[in-house]
Length: 223
Image (cartoon, rainbow, N blue to C red; front, side):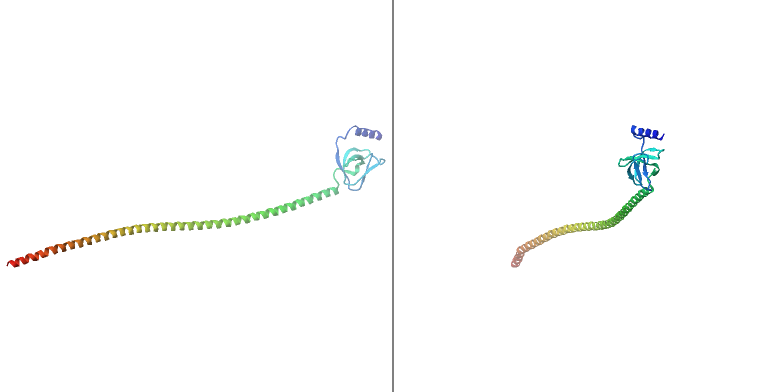
């Protein structure tokens, strides 16, 4: 019966590939043998370390063996009781340890990034505070410039007013000087006319007085 079952299984294997292949791992207790057939009478092909990943091609419940394939492509038979449906505890521990290491590494990286971000944040805040101080200083300087400009404008307006007053005073001075010249000219003409009149009166008197005297003498001579 077993011989016929084995022959049927062998024909099925030769007829085509298995319908599916499920992963399996060697238990972490010891090494197991990979044989050419499903019995201890078959030759040993490989010694497989515990924790090695295998691909299960078929299982023989009667013999207690499973046909497997290694990652290197070697096919053979191993005892089914040494196979597990998940990695061994040692492999899982190594995997978890690696994941933990990676997590710690990522955590350290995140801490470094967080530290860098905080440093950049503090630097940005410091720059903002400096900019605010610079802004306040510029605003104060601008206010001072505005005050100075206002003072300059006031001084300019005052200077313009003084210039206008000076121009008006100059005009008045020129007017007074012109009036003074005219008055001087009038005075000169007046004195000239007065002198001419005096001279004319003197001439008239010089002519008339002798005649008056001569006439008086003539009267006296008649008597």
